[in-house]
Amino acid sequence: MVTEDEVRRVLKTVVDPEFGLSVIDLGLIYELKIIDGKKVYIKMTLTTPMCPLANAIVADVYQKVKEIPGVEDVDIELSFDPPWSPDMMTPEARKLLGL
Image 1 (cartoon, one colour):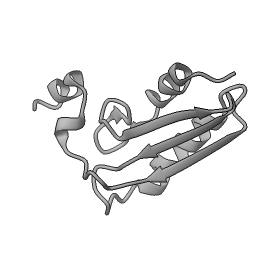
Image 2: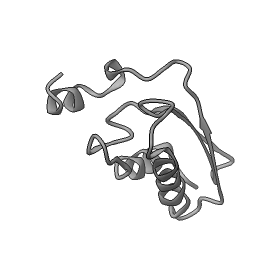
Image 3: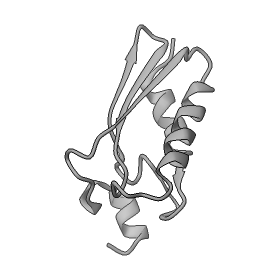
């Protein structure tokens, strides 16, 4: 049975190459659900709708979550509502970026 904590730990390894910070630290993960203990639903955003690395970031999220033992399916929904802002970052990430 997959847990939300396991998924969050893996998502901490998915780094946005432009910022050098994880999708968790950047606040890009809006929602995370484990369904029936084996399906993972992720609602996420990107720092901008025109992100040139969007496909790579989403593919990395999918691949790393899919590799968790017990995960049978990964469903990722991209949303830009609400739009991402630096306020969504963790305090540690804001500090690293000097914000």
